[in-house]
Image 1 (cartoon, rainbow, N blue to C red):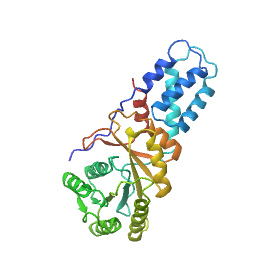
Image 2: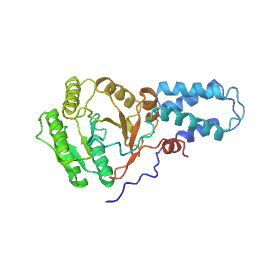
Image 3: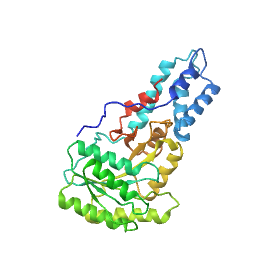
Image 4: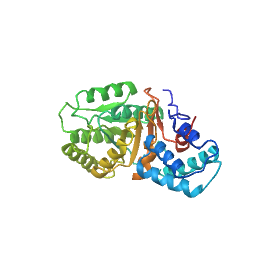
Length: 305
């Protein structure tokens, strides 16, 4: 099986183009320029809190500067943004986590339409490409077609799947999935769940039940609660992340749909606001276009012309 490409990616963004135009020529870094820069950050979906922090850092670094050098400013902003993200990344985090006490169980959550099930399929492909045994759990028993969609992915990736009928108890599916993984010696377990919003309290409670049920089979599981978010939703994604953190607790993020109209800034906003590491980004529709997140590549793409 072909190994997923993971050495490069690009995000479509006009962020630095706007910054470069704003600071080009002989300008004083006054309140008007900073206000315009603030607008650029907000338009890039960075978020208000993170924007205010960057504006403060910028005004402290370049007080009353004439002839603002876009290159110098670019390097400074790259450095600050990199540090903001890296402060929340897990030190030494790797794609293949420690599976000494396998299976490594990941509970995958997110709202409908975020690309959750597709992300599970692509993640299964990455693990399989690295020689790992993968098991999928079709825990989204609410949405019509969700089980079928995950089944298609299991066939495409050539991995096992545990599933029941539409309307079945999702916690029971999760229980059977983890038990099967233990008996068959699988390395990774990826459990799908129904799409949820904060006002869907019964679904949020069901999600907590799934988590408790998994823990009864393997006390340390789930090892990871991965929140999948649609990168094109902008600042709404920051609000969604807060809802999931409050109800279930999130250990890592996967940001999808960063290949089209997405501006990419919401990654920075979520990381800085909630302190949750970003683990994967989706940059296209192909099976190999779910990539292990690299801070430096992300920042460089944000500032690309």
